Length: 449
Image 1 (cartoon, rainbow, N blue to C red):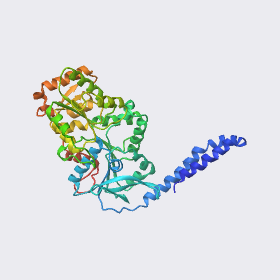
Image 2 (cartoon, one colour):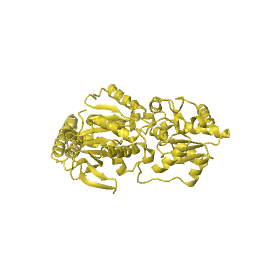
Image 3 (cartoon, helix red, strand yellow):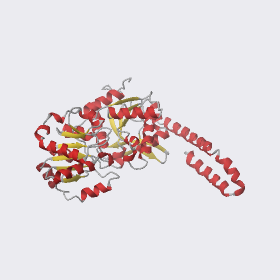
Image 4 (cartoon, rainbow, N blue to C red):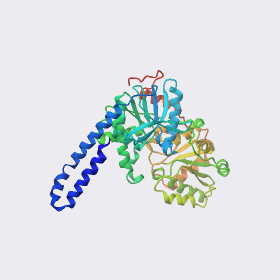
């Protein structure tokens, strides 16, 4: 039974009665001093009940297992870069370690009859969700690869503390903490919500895996600035991979239309992949191309990604553009097969973001043999090294236009078969890196890392 809602309701009702009845107002002010203590007592009782409830559950699955959180894919079928990472890494871990572990997909749910948060099994083949709760054993591993804000709920309820008590290794991925570092790029409140999520992750993880050294440094700085100890956490980074020929398919996705294929294949094409949102800097790239088009350049600019937030004017500008549908394309809700087709047909991939935690389109473009034109910021230097073409962090539209014009004129030098395309690793390599960090072995027993 959950005591907190009941206690909170009664306590607040009594307080209002005292305030509204003049003879008892003095009692109300005295009473108010004890409300936090009373609520704390109620919450403590709830935590004790929840801890006892979790502890009494018995493991029912064969072990060892690796659990992948796919909550967002089950509930909302999000199709961002992070979800591509989730499915790609799931498939790679299953290929590499499926003989030693049963690699499972799970989703977060709240069981009203138990008043408790649990993970339940999900069958990716049958698209079937199970009501059977996950009760892990001592050799099991949980990987929270997705950015699942709901994790705060089971963290507060004590689920992961119970799992750690059972000997489970709890690993969470941190893709970035940009909403905390740059709240101006996000909807109001995103910074506070992201910090709540990150603090929850740091509170219960045995392992925290960052998707780049840049993100790792950001997390370390976050902990240092807020005096959060991470001594009990293995905090490391991996490099994300790319396998365009084996891109995981989402449940839904659109194919390229014939007119789109014609444009992609008949002119020099510059492609940007990513949600249309403030930090991606689509406006600056469009400004530069308008200068080129005014000069008679026939190159095409292709935006691939969904409509994000705070960019309504840009969306109107794109859809009402005189060259929309001929030299300017915006492709949304593409299947992963169609995305691979866009990469293959493009001459260059542009990554103009002001900040990223990694930059998955970069490695996908490199894996497709395409040259990347990127803003000169640390994360892109980390990924590209000496490959690619860089422009100044605060380049103007005219300076960007000059970079694009040189790329057009020197296509034979900078094009898809040149050394500028760079080298990337596969998802299998990423899976092995994750295994080395969290202790996944071919024998099915965790290393003592």
